[in-house]
Image (cartoon, rainbow, N blue to C red; front, side):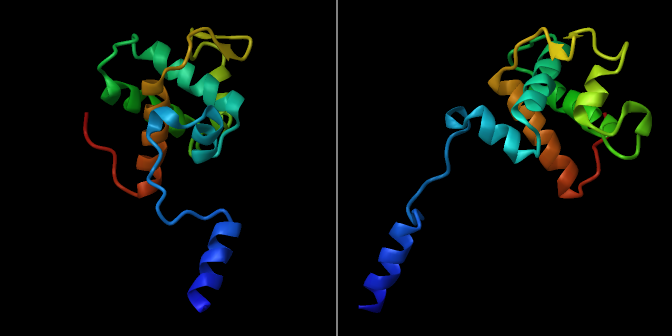
Length: 132
């Protein structure tokens, strides 16, 4: 009886014990943005800039991650000259030619989205940046 009560509580709470991790391609822009603490607009701008700066090489995730690391670094408190936010760092005059009126003229891709998230996770992992 106790097990049944627990199972009913789990089901009514919407918790799935058998739920497999969602493939990246199935995640929404809202989920991706939330995973790094950004709004959808900020994430879209960030990912679009990463895509543009990568020269759109379809196989180069590493280059995209390094670009995203640079942007996250500029948006940190360590670099107030860039404004301490992702949007401020990306819209600084003369920084990224792909940004016009606060928007990237280059569309984001799954690969650039992955790079933004990977760079964020790397920074928050406490690991040192590798030598390039």
